[in-house]
Amino acid sequence: MPFTDDEMKKILKACDQHPSGRGENRAVQMTALVLLMRHTGLRIGDACTLERKRIHHGLLVLRTEKGGTEVRIPVHPDAMKALDKIPNRSPYYFWSGESKRRTVVNIWEDSFKSMFKRAGIDGHSHRLRHTFAVDLLQRGTSLEHVSSLLGHKNLKITQKHYSAFTPGRRDALEDAVRAAWKEAPRR
View 1 (tube, rainbow, N blue to C red):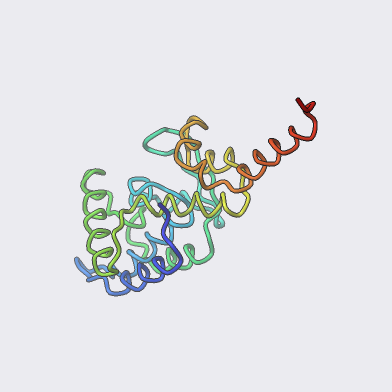
View 2 (view 1 turned 90 degrees about the horizontal axis):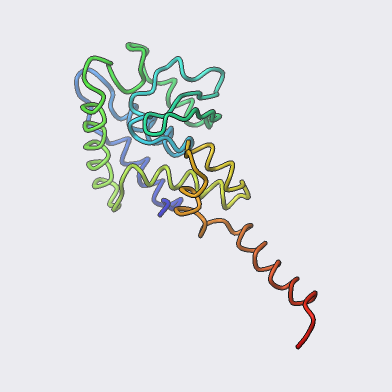
C-alpha cells in the first residue's frame, strides 16, 4: 500500500530527527533518500548506491540492479534540493563506495526501520516505490509508462501489483461493458 500524504509528513518529520553519525548529517541524507525514493520509485538498493553522475540537469538515468533495465526519470525539485544539501565527499550520495553494496543497503534499511518507528508508522522502504507508482496511476499515467519508470521487464509484473490503482483503466473497462449493452441485440 502507498503512504498517505499524512504519513509522508510524519516520515519527513521523523527524518529531521534522525541521529547523525560518522561526521555526516544523517538527517539531511535520510530526508534526501526518502524524497528520492518517493519521487523516482527507485528500490532502496539502487537509491542508496546512487552515483552523483547518474543525475544530469534533474534527469536520473541508470540501469537497475535487480532487472538490469535502464530507467530515465525526472527528479522532483524537492528531491533535487534535498540531494544538493548532501556534501560532495564521495561519488555517491548515500555511500562511501568502500563497503560492499549489501552492507550499505542493510545500514539504510536499519535507518528506515528506526525512522518509521519514530514516525509511528508501520512501514518499509518499498512502500515509497508503491507511493510513487500509485500516485502516477491515480493522476492518469498509463500502466505501461509506470512499468517503464519502475524498470519492470514485463508489464504483467506492474499489472499484478498496481491494476487496482488505475481508475482510468477501471472506468474504461466499465464503460466498455456499458457500451456493449447498447450494441448487443436484446434477447
